[in-house]
Amino acid sequence: MFARCSSACVRGVDGEATDVEVHLRQGNPRFDVVGLADTAAREARDRVRSALVQSGYRFPEGRVLVNLAPAETPKSGAGHDLPMAIAILLADRVLPPDAGVGWLMFGELALDGRLRPVRGAFLVASTAERRGLAGIVAPQGNGAEAALATGLPVYAPETLAEAVRFLAGEAAIDASVPAVPCAARPSRRDFAEVHGQEAVKRALVVAACGGHNVLLVGPPGSGKTLLAERFADLLPPLEREQAIDVARIRSAAGLPVDGLPSTRPFRAPSCSASLAGVTGGGQPPRPGEITLANHGVLFLDELPQFRPDVLESLRQPLESGLVTLSRASGHVTFPSRFQLLTAMNPCPCGFGAGTPRCTCTPPAVQRYLSRISGPLIDRIDLRVPVPAVPYAALRSGRASRGTDSMASEVTAGREVQRHRFGGPRLNATMSPREMAQHCGVTPAAEKHIENAAATGRLSARGIGRVLRVARTVADLAGAAGGGTPDRIDEAHVLEVLRWRLEAGGVQ
Ligand SMILES: [Zn+2]
Image (cartoon, rainbow, N blue to C red):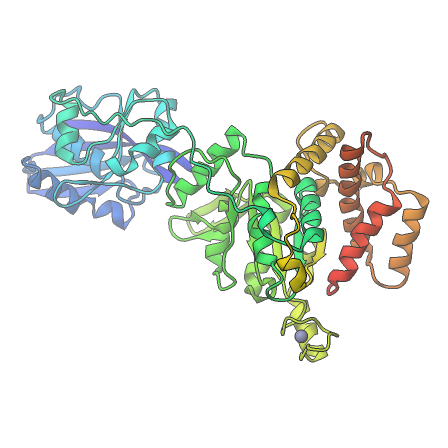
């Protein structure tokens, strides 16, 4: 006596179709699960047996063999519990033979027969359409997420017994889940609430416009974090495909997916975060912070306090937009295309080396700065000083620039870049060849760069970074004033150089 049910499991940030096959035979009572099941999937035996009995069904006598196919795909977690129980009832003729046909099923069973939600419902459900299935049976706690992934009907019962009655045609479950169109926009924190940092806001507009990674340098209490938290709202809203990517990644990470997101992810891991927490890890591998920040912003506050291996691990994702985790069972690759926003104090004590209140010794300052030098700092185009805000500016009733006006300037500047590159690319991604083509400067601007280089304030690499940002400054000027200057002007270069030199530290 044989039966089969369709299911799926999570693989990276994808769903992978599986079949649950059950074979009942005469013989000594035995219950085996084969097909590369991990511990949780093997323990399904106890849950399925108990759930069936507690729901009022007989557990078959004799030998029960469950095969999770395809055999070469590792199956993890408890999501195969429900299809296993249903396939046993089919093989045992409790359910009519055609009862489970065309349905994708998943869900964990509690010992008393209730259905528990599992991680990755969005990914699992998204496999149903491409297999030509008619609908999905999922735990109630996963119903909305499954419905979001597919246009198919989703039935989300609370218990195994309800699922059985529905598949037998005895009960119509009124649980076809309403599709959730869009996640409510989180209440926005506006830049207008941050007073006295208009120069930093200007730099953040430039960064958002050209896609430049940023380092904010300033004493504690200067508002670095307040400014950073508002940065993601300067970026254009997610397009539909991007929103689906974000939902997939959240689902794979086991985070709630209660609608297609419209705003860009903003992830801010603490400086004590582990390597696995940042890059992803575990068995089976789950996405880390750099993948959760895909299509959005990764904010690292107190940059020098992060573990050196964590900072080192950012290098490859910043180059390629991907992170690869090596496992004994093979490699897993996650997307990780994010904009990097970082902040630090100018020195360990925070007041800034050379200022009267600074208590740091020169070697201590050197050690502090050296933690972030090298390959990581090479990927950060824009370095911005965040001065301590004078009390008067904080208290002044003067209007402060808000998010809407900043975001529309970003949009206009991105239009100029779209025109230049013939697509949605940004200045931060220019290759050396493209820079030679697009970053011509006026003789006066050239002089300032030469001067900074000659006095040792700008390295050869630094020149490239200054030019990329200056290109964006010129684009913003062009967008605002009509016509884009082909060449980068003195004023554009000076603005970028000033930020860079005032931020000090690593060149
Ligand atoms: Zn100090």
